[in-house]
Figure 1 (cartoon, one colour):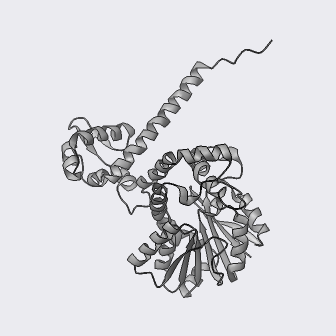
Figure 2 (tube, helix red, strand yellow; figure 1 turned 45 degrees about the vertical axis):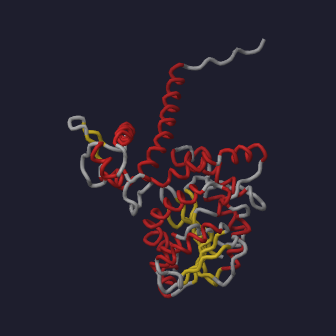
Figure 3 (cartoon, one colour; figure 1 turned 135 degrees about the vertical axis):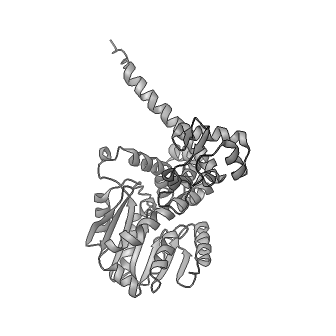
Length: 357
């Protein structure tokens, strides 16, 4: 006789339903954050104290009825304070750092563009799941690029020059006296330009296979007056000029590549004597069970639709994913001809690894 179906535990069922409804509310909330950012509502609330819906609507140039409903969604989410006595709403200094201050290292509002692009690209992802094919970086919706660029710009600004580069043996001294630096997978060029601003005696080269990102990087360089010190070119990770670099950087991109081993081998040949590779990767432990947390959830989801999808669109298609872990990277760099790979620094979101031939 076949065994009867296992009966659900009512308490566990309710617990899981509560979690699912909470996640559904959070996904709706992402739309509200994007609206608040794009309409300037958060900026209009920053440092303004308690505001009525009418005041905020007037300051932001929006219709009051929509603003009132949006404010209630934000209050329910804990993203603004509601003062019942005055029926007013307030953005706290802490909330402003995350939602309104575009120069804050904690600014996250543009990150919801990544989630928007994941929805907009759903048909491509469904096809990839069914066929095992890939979705190249350049085949995604434009909101992916602006979301990733805006989020990482501030995050790197807070850590790259002040913490990560000093953690690399001997690199800061080379940069001050004049070094050649390659930023592979540079995207919109924010990491490249941050280093160039801090080290004006060094030369910087940003390479990316996505032409649209390189065009954006060139505009940023011209706007900042760095066009002579920084050069951005469209180039694959195994096809940029091997001119002898003192430092080669991979910022949150090597795991996306179809052939990260090939890219690491190419970097080993492109280094000047005594040169260093700085590998910045999403923070991950080496075992799946140690990544089952909020950050892991975020990275595994992005990895499913973006990172693995791009890798599978290229030759080799190793599809390491965003949670490869330090041990896996050590094996790849050892096979690529590097003699050492060490953890130079870390944050809750990144591992910073130093590799030397």
